[in-house]
Length: 223
Ligand SMILES: Nc1nc2c(ncn2[C@@H]2O[C@H](COP(=O)(O)OP(=O)(O)O)[C@@H](O)[C@H]2O)c(=O)[nH]1
Ligand SMILES: Nc1ncnc2c1ncn2[C@@H]1O[C@H](COP(=O)(O)OP(=O)(O)O)[C@@H](O)[C@H]1O
Image 1 (cartoon, rainbow, N blue to C red):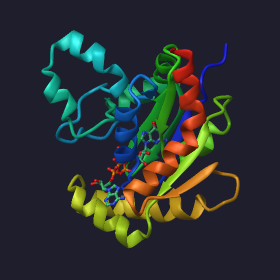
Image 2 (image 1 turned 120 degrees about the vertical axis):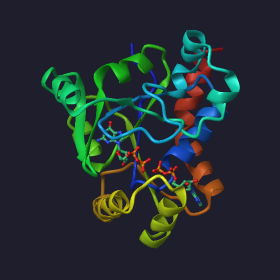
Image 3 (image 1 turned 30 degrees about the vertical axis):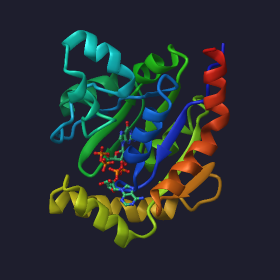
Image 4 (image 1 turned 90 degrees about the vertical axis):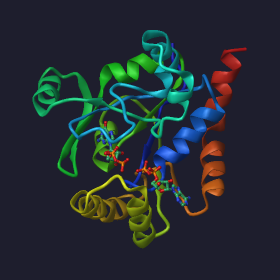
């Protein structure tokens, strides 16, 4: 049985992936499920371990968090926060379909994070860097590949600074990675669609239209 096609969202850190994703998942409840990655980076304020929007009911049931706290959480796409040792153990164990080093930390998509979403017949969304894109292309996942790009490196830097999540060092590493991402993403055939996130509304409309066929499939199946 084949469910809806997964979606890989990529693009430089600070390009607006989480912002667009958060909105999409809110507007289409019960259609998308986020593949919660593992990372060795430290959680940001407001981020919680292993929490994805697709886990919302479970989370509410299990820990009785006040609904308002969960819904106002800054982040719609948190991680399983792990040590390097734990992460390496998982990689050695072949638990991951891809993993990469980004800005001095390890990130990876576990097989179970995708399976958990696909078991519910939801569109599985993966947020991965360009190395992740290249490695997922070697698997049989067959997702739709979408790159979210900033209008310019200068605007990206401003957005990252305004977000106030990075130290100067991690900001510089992200900008360096962004330069590489912006170059590699131009290669023909890497992405099915590249969206320049200048005006947020326009970017969101483009993203929504690109996914409408898959959204429709899930909605039809649930009727
Ligand atoms: N390859 C890979 N990249 C990931 C994964 N999870 C997140 N990333 C990427 O890691 C980068 C840094 O993510 P994060 O630390 O959350 O910072 P942010 O994107 O600036 O919010 C981003 O480019 C993400 O797309 C993953 O599981 N695999
Ligand atoms: N179109 C836009 N115009 C202005 N600011 C934006 C736009 N899209 C996103 N932002 C802001 O830029 C910052 C980075 O966006 P975010 O979604 O965290 O990026 P990513 O998930 O790709 O790292 C956030 O503070 C967000 O509010």
